[in-house]
Image (tube, rainbow, N blue to C red):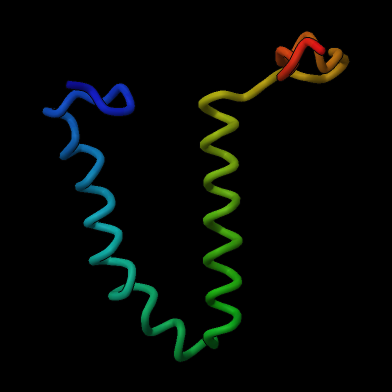
Length: 80
């Protein structure tokens, strides 16, 4: 059975980077929280995460919307 169009045999490919990030994140970034400061690091890591997510979404499902009407980009939610 596929969940979110992912075959069960491929689930490990999605879990492995998550687990690696959970292990390496505190090891690599932890010392910076004490040298740079917690507020700056939290702000910086959230900003970097947002930029990376936006770039990934743009790369995956980017929409060429320049000069197009809204109706040609997406269907209306209701017809009434």
